[in-house]
Picture 1: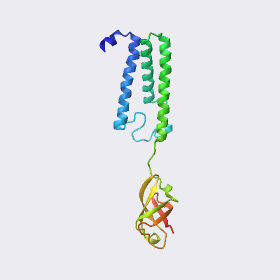
Picture 2: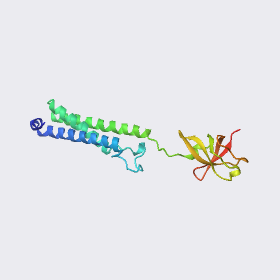
Picture 3: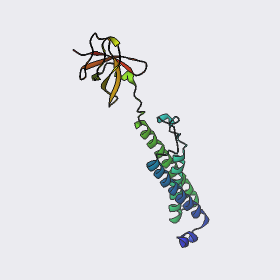
Length: 188
């Protein structure tokens, strides 16, 4: 490799240096994202950039993609003996294309991202089954199992019914109180 590097002129060394360094950094970024969950473009707590609007055109990933496209295109074009002006123009164009591809891919991937936070208001109108007996006339709390946002969830519940609701009784959620206490009525 040393012989190859020594045979290059200065412009070719610049393009190949950019290509090799940015490619190595691209692989490291991928590995860190894949194996450790580290994200170069978003905050660790997910409070910034956790949605499609959080994806920026100028980001670490996009800049590295630009450099990969720019460096490889320039190195290969100079190796083919093309003029410097043509090489720079084509390298810049390919770098911009790489940058845009990464930008749109990240936007698409971020649009698939789900929050995962249960919103108990989505339970209103849904049917569930009593899991732990619910005392009559709101005299205490029991629990129901309900499919909420695609997950089978056990949630505390009360009932205004005049009888206790035994396990396996089918119920409908009529309201949510205090953020996560469901009010249920028995199905007949």
